[in-house]
Each structure stands twice: as C-alpha cells, then as structure tokens.
Image 1: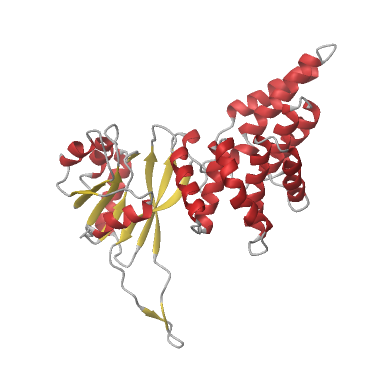
Image 2: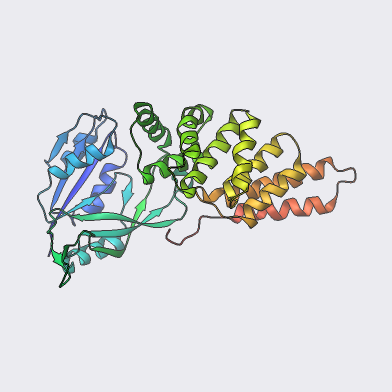
Length: 351
C-alpha cells in the first residue's frame, strides 16, 4: 500500500478547512499545511489535524507556494487539495481502495473535479479531470530495444474518484490582479495560463480589467508568431473589451476579422449585446441565435447557452412590447427562449 502526503496552501480558510480535512484525515499518512498569511483561526484549526504547519511569505505566485509545500512532503505520493474541496463517503472509500491497490508505476492520478456552483468557476463542464495525486520521486527508465530513449511522458491513471468543489464565492478578481501584475512585469504566460486569463476575463472581467488586458491581447492578435486558435481567443477578449469601453471602431475591427475565419459563439454573443444595447432587437436576435445554435464556444460555454438564450428572450420581449398589435408570435417566442434559458445547465461530460 502506498503512503500519501497531503499538501495544502491556505489563507483565511477557517470556514472550510475542518470540513476538508475531516474527509481526508483517514486517507493521508501526513498532513502538511502551508499558511500564506492567515489572520483568522486557520492555523488553530489546522493544528487539530497536524503539527506540520509552515509559514510562507506570499509573493503572488501559487506555483512557488505549491513547490514549497511539496518540499516538505516525505511520503510516496503527494495529494493536492484546496480548502473548499470535499470528498463524500463514497469517494472516501474509493480513495482508500485506490491507495491499497495502486500500481506504483503510476506517477499521476487524475480525479473528476465536480463544480457544484457553476457560476463560481471558469470551466465549461460540471465534471473535468484534474491531476490530483503525484508520485513524489520519479524514476527515469529507458525504453525501446533499439534507438533507446528515456521515457519522458508520465504514467497517468484516470480514476473514478470525484472531488466536490464547493467554493463560497468567485476568486476571479484575485486571479485577474495576478495576471495583470505578470503582464505589467513582462512575464511570459504559458498557453494554458493565457487561456485561463481569457476565460476569467469573459466570465467576470470589468471594463478596467479589459482596459489593462487589451494591449497584451492586441499584441498576440497582431503577431504572426501565434497560432490561429490563440489569435481567435485574443479576438474574443478584444471584442468584449472594446464593447465595454464604448469603442465601436475597434469592436467591429476584431469582430468582423474573426467572422472571416470560423465564427465562434463568443463573438456572435458580443454582436448580439452590441445591437441589443442600441435597441436594434431584430439584429440582436440574429446574432444571439447564431451564438446559441449556429456556432461553438471556445472559451465560455455560457455564450452558446444561457447568456444568448436570455438575450433572445429579451429581444422578443422588447419586440412584443414595441409591436403595434402586441404580436402573440413575439410573446410565444419570448416564452420559448426564456424557458430554454431557465432549463439550460452546464454539460456533464468531461472536457
């Protein structure tokens, strides 16, 4: 049976830490808590579960804090958890069984991350696989009988364990501040982090966030060094940003350029929002419809779902109220899209 170190970084988690640790304490052989500056009772709560509590001076770098927590681990594997995560009884037993029968050649175990509160995350599905359990020390081995090489890819196991993510609120403002600090310093963002920056902007960014982000994403869009997919993500950010900043020239510049390639739901939704805000409800309805039914999302699945369906409902409600005879067709269409929006939910499949 393998042994596991739990490594957590925490700050002001008094409301959730005990709940999380109570579901993990019987699985873990070692609990390591790295506190990044709590001013509440987080440390006292942690002390009821472990004496391995360490102070860490926060430098706006989650990776550095995670690396520090890993440096304190001594067991075969390391499990990473956040305080707002919970395992139910079924998944506690599944984790214990995994621990008992784990093939020690496995280097990473992925678990199904369940987003219980859809509005408090930037994911496009209810369930998604995430790496959660890591072999602490990796052995490098040679492969192939001729032209031999060291195996570089880790051995990954996709488990059926479900980790429930139950946040109290959204952390996007904190994340956006870190992104902005990075780009202001000229720090290069990886493809994955650049994608997350774009997602978080589209979920919760305000006009100030977009004003700070526009130069960075304009540089990406105008550069031939980036792929078409990355430039399309940048176009989504720029279109939303220039709409919020009331700059129609640049709004249409990026929206129309994107339309010449393969239109996406995000750009169609932005066009719907633009025309809705100038009371051109028929044109807005056309673009909301395209966002909902004719295109696919690349960053924010809500743009092809409830956002655009609510936009359609709003268009037909406005058209009904403006019609001379209070057209029943408009009224029926309004109720149809309103019901679709209310019944819409994140897909359950893993992305």
